Amino acid sequence: MEDLLDIINSVEDQDEECSLSERSQILTSRCLDNWNYDLGFVYSNQQNKFSGKILLVVIVSFPKSDYDEVLRRVKEHNK
Image 1 (cartoon, helix red, strand yellow):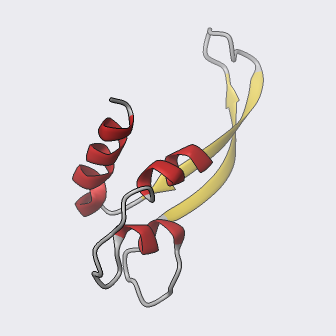
Image 2: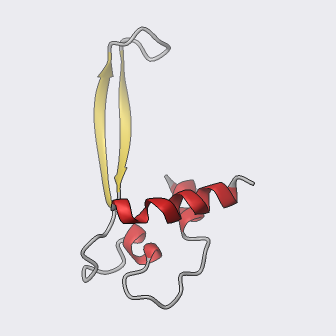
């Protein structure tokens, strides 16, 4: 999770109101489309290396309008 946020926030956002960095870090409540983070537990009954185990799952949800920029930043990081 920390690595993802480092990648997302490695780019200086222009002085836009409610920038991607602000929304991803939930820096202000004035942004209506802040990202959401959840933590959950899932029991895996799939036949794989996690079979019979309880998994701790981190869920990140963000607006679809951020997708293209998030993808661009991750691709740029992975070059």
